[in-house]
Length: 431
Ligand code: HEM
Picture 1 (tube, protein in one colour):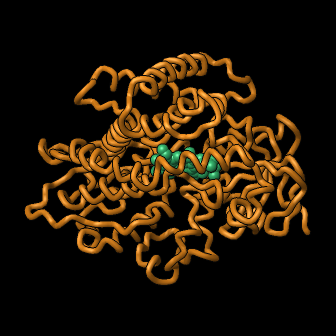
Picture 2: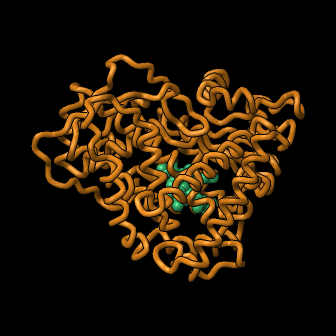
Picture 3: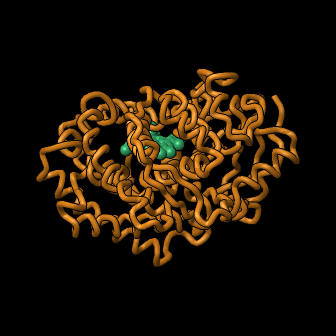
């Protein structure tokens, strides 16, 4: 067993959180290069932390040693969301997953598909009508917001526009509290943004509780009937599901999909994706590999252990970094290149080595729902449009936090297809 390379430094002064939050990709790349290994240590959120940047390390952390590396109940998410599955551990987490998974599979999932298709159509029709370029990230975020509010709360902008607006605005304020938290760890949690976010959270909880009492239909109805440990559990989880997190993650993926398939040079790829659902599936895998919406996730070791043969002391944190894991050259040859064909060639059947939706027993419970969302939105775009960047030359440099996307919002011009192709179909399963 060897000692972890790098240094965790001394408390507070040795903390590298700001450096990591400023540019997590450069942070990891520099250290991988310096230490010559994809597992190293540093100090994040003022805690000694092992950074995991290899596929093998990620599997060990999230799968084989999932009972050793636990969720952190004091995670920054907890301040803004309260008790929910994300920060739960052990039996409590297992039972919550068992209950909640029902919402995102089988007949519950099937019952949402009309809404998902109609929202995709409402948000994505007429993109070419004005002839003007469209700022795609806000467009897709609006699509994601309509999806989650329609699906989880039965709130639709065409039926109750004011309530829809109010919840959207509250979710934005609540989100600002989440992203201000890591920066304020050294001056804990009394910024005005944080207080505003807590007020927004209270108002959102009032709306959610009202919906849980009055609505009988859809997910809210299913959720109320689930066996959950206590009265506040359903509302705490609805807060998680409707918060800005999911619309932003969807907008991130749809933006990356649109950008990588844009322009005359990608016409062949778009045509192939229209005609071949398997090929569209490979494209979506490759989009998630290169541009995972979230940078990764964090765990805490509940005993002395090892990762990749390195000693990890009890209470150390471990951070898996999806961006770096997805570029591990041991598994993904030409890691920086967009090569959908890899998924029916060298990497065929290796979707389980991605971690854009987590991995192992604590992976994302919305995997299938996410698949349906992507299928509906990407299918709609492909069936109705060709598209290109407008202007042709734009700065597409990505930022990776809080959600991956180009720093400067990209502008895309859409052209209606003359002949609509037949419906594209994605196979079931991830992504
Ligand atoms: C593009 C969309 C999405 C992305 C990128 C995403 C990503 C992730 C990731 C990376 C994790 C693992 C976090 C960790 O390892 O600490 C996770 C967990 C989770 N996701 Fe998603 N997710 C998405 C959509 C959804 C949807 C639609 C839902 C349901 C409404 C959802 C609910 C959850 C929950 C409840 C967990 C926690 C599971 C647990 O701790 O046991 N996600 N997600």
